Amino acid sequence: MARYQRQMNIALERLDQGLARVHTLIKRGENQEALHFMDNNLKDLYQELENLINIEPGNNNSKVGFLE
Image 1 (cartoon, helix red, strand yellow):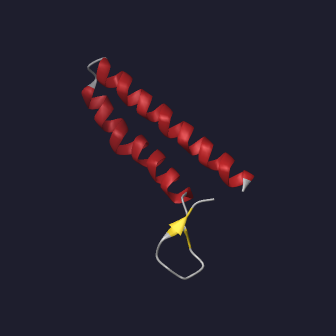
Image 2 (cartoon, helix red, strand yellow):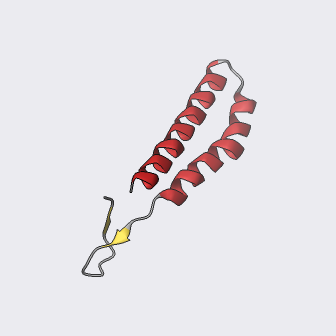
Image 3 (cartoon, one colour):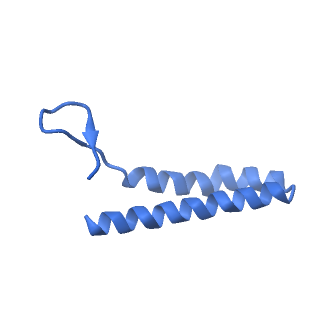
């Protein structure tokens, strides 16, 4: 679990840094650069985080899961 938590924290930090970069680009008026970053880099950062999230089914084989 510690390894998973560390990976999640790293992925969340990378996504946070990416969002901060988009914010800075927009604030500077560099909208085309911001859109390019969002379409390429930010999308990859989000997908990296999404791939780490794994919801396990409960004991009763329901579709509802939980994160420990």
